[in-house]
Length: 261
Image 1 (cartoon, helix red, strand yellow):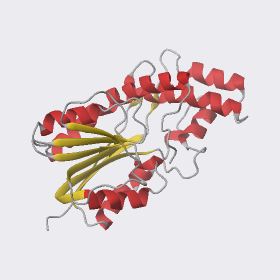
Image 2 (cartoon, helix red, strand yellow):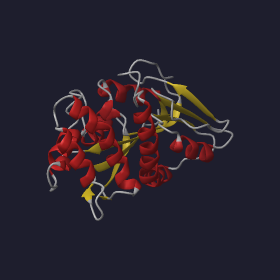
Image 3 (spheres, rainbow, N blue to C red):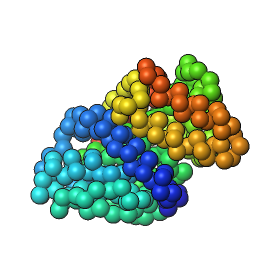
Image 4 (cartoon, rainbow, N blue to C red):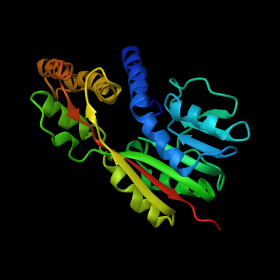
């Protein structure tokens, strides 16, 4: 993977900082409900993989208390907030850097594996890092159909290009559909999945995480000659029109537990 997850251009960094905040505002409550469902208790050893700004890590830190510990990792830590004393923040590449075997009571990752070329090996690494009885919670997307929804041109064409992830051939935007099978194949038990989608609107966190990503992506498409400047500007204006609404991709939280020895 690239060592810069979020980019280096100042304007792009500013957009990404706001975008991550919107994503957290939209997704954190749903993530917290899933984690509450499995029971995050004091004293747990937890890994938060691809922590971004660290909002989930901070929530986990409060739940595990002073007796527990959260390892909060990302390949790029430029947006990671300061954390409580029971959180270790570490720059970590899940593809190449090791994890301790049999160490964690809970491992959580959100919107990470679809972006990792060696995702199959990473799932194995995460299972190996769990203690017997430990929980693995992987949230990823199902973009299948997301790019095909009814939208007016020129945004429709641009949306289809971006939602397919066509600039990264190794990306799997539908890997959320595969995780339950991978957990079963690794022998995890108590398997479950929770999915949802929502209406995306400008000015709301549930839409802005995507529309801000669009603002980052469109200039690159124009520079590459894939999209005309006029169409790019028109598409960005479309998604800011009063009353604009579109469907989100499906988000799937897949849950499994490593059997007790």
